Length: 181
Image (cartoon, rainbow, N blue to C red; front, side):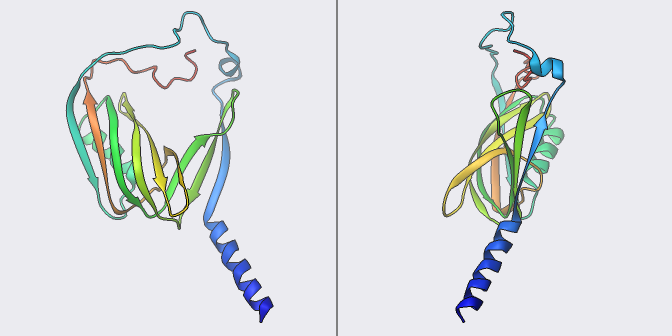
């Protein structure tokens, strides 16, 4: 009887672990750009001023792909530049990535869990020249976690994302360029 219980627990644990996967991907540009030192011509910090022209609130229903939905709304609303001001709700499953090393070339660890639901406790990021760069923090009953939002993150109860749309004239083209250093 004890061996049956142990076997059942082992199988349950194995099945649970099989649903959560991680893979590391090297995000190299070129060997030359990855070896490039910092330049004195690039300031430590760059300030770009602008105004929020309008606020767009996005509401997602059950099973919607969160990233695909944000990308579609950005295209439909003709948004070039925006600040992701807020995000709340819940997801049925998720996929995120986070940086996993400290030297170039950069590496990202992609974490995907197709069976674990979570609450979205915050979301932030940008739309830069029409491209969504979103990060989110989620929580389950045991921990908070998060990273860069990836496809196949599906909404559970609902999700709400608020965008502060910036003027199209703002030049944010280098804001997330890791080679501009």
